[in-house]
Image (cartoon, rainbow, N blue to C red; front, side):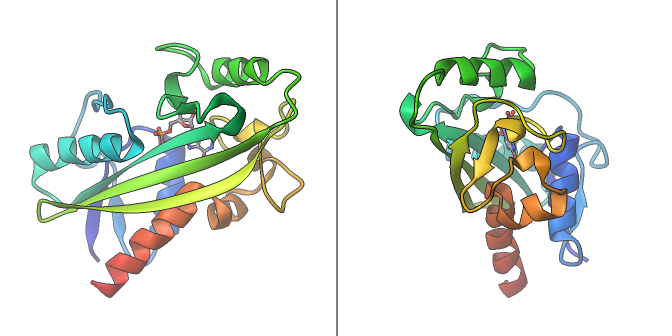
Length: 192
Ligand code: IMP
């Protein structure tokens, strides 16, 4: 089976993505590939960060790999936190700190529209290719659910009455930004 190194240190994402690619690709973690250290993420766009992370792996291994970058884009905040979603509340902040800051920023605001957007960069034989997935929804006024990670407890996707953190992983994967981007990646990989 084809092997791809996934440039992430996030074990939740590794599990989500490995499950989505099951049967078509063997996903290799950074640890399994013998890679250690902090992957730089200093670009100003999701596409730029995804490329930077995949390139970091490619330069060290010469093996086909991919990386993803996700942002939560909130309408009333002009698209923020966007590419800065991970460190919205500060450099070493927790998921909870980020949620607190977001709820505060939207306090009393009736426009709760938001979207998660993921860009994946696949590097194959040194050539980068991009895949994108987006899910529209809204920011709730308080936390609901225990599943998932990040902003999941306060994000409710359109056409659902529960937050991402109230959904089993399989359901989230079918409709999520990352799930949709991975589906595009799988479509490409199975056709090529
Ligand atoms: P990353 O670029 O994929 O690491 O995502 C950046 C940040 O967006 C993460 O640190 C999380 O706070 C948030 N994020 C990414 N994906 C998800 C998700 O599926 N649910 C909730 N938050 C997410």
